[in-house]
Image (cartoon, rainbow, N blue to C red; front, top):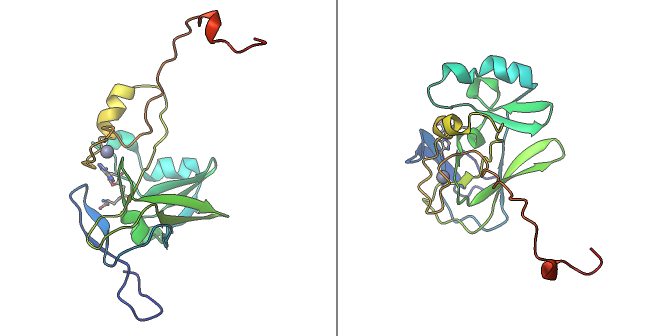
Length: 174
Ligand SMILES: C[S@@+](CC[C@H](N)C(=O)[O-])C[C@H]1O[C@@H](n2cnc3c(N)ncnc32)[C@H](O)[C@@H]1O
Ligand SMILES: [Zn+2]
């Protein structure tokens, strides 16, 4: 739990979540643009992340990994130095976002958050483009948002049709 330096009640608390397992909930009103907490953990490379979390052995996806850059992943499991941020669930209609500042990851509020509301950001897992139908199930989203895209992966890119546009829609000079 966060402990305020000014002796005020902490900003958030960990509780059982309707989305998944445990989640992080606002205890006090959180103003838009607040830097709430840091995503901490051990910095490892992709191979080590694959060794630690073997997707093929999981029925449904469950990890504490956060990709910092193309070579570095943060393992936020409790036994790897992870903190409360590792318990923030995904939502397709997020009230928070993860911001990379320097080599650190912070969770910021995207809007005002009332006490009791669960904090969530959009995980936007990268798609590989392969086995998408299977992966949709593996990464099934239970955020409950009206605009839930059904999966915690990024929205699938729409296939572009390469139809010739009528000449009248082209800008001059093309
Ligand atoms: C970093 S943990 C979040 C904390 C998790 N609730 C727990 O108690 O361990 C990330 C995992 O939580 C689950 N999760 C988070 N958001 C989800 C969502 N919207 N739908 C389904 N599962 C979710 C997935 O299993 C994901 O791999
Ligand atoms: Zn969703």
